[in-house]
Length: 152
Image 1 (cartoon, rainbow, N blue to C red):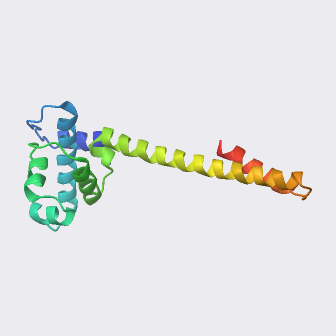
Image 2: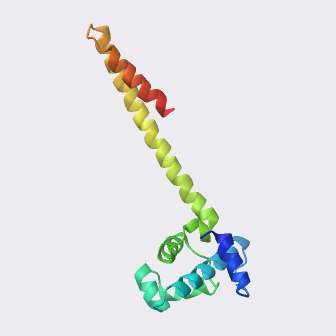
Image 3: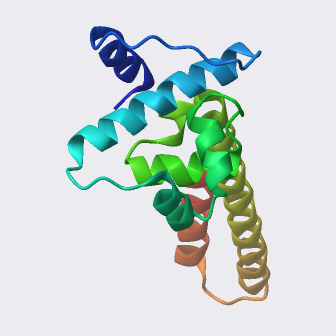
């Protein structure tokens, strides 16, 4: 469920949101966290104490309480654990941290593709050397060239 949808639902329910967090992003993340927590509790008939949830998530129980009461800004570790537990995406609660994670994954993919491309170029050079020595490898050269060009 998107963060805006969660906030809209809270407003419909008449929830008054207050937290002493000074940064706007921290305050908005707190609103989304409380909404996701409330929705999770509404949808799950079995009540779990904060202490049990904290133990499952490997979070200090007082930190969990402080996150939920808006007394402490969410850390990335807590965000990932809580969003997984509550069944929402991290960026639904803290959009900018979700973007950082996505950017990191994209950088890893780009680095991997560069490595593959460089390896294929080395193979292409080896095949061209074989061709120069008289070995018939035209079809291999074409195939490797097609793969390299498809990687961009």
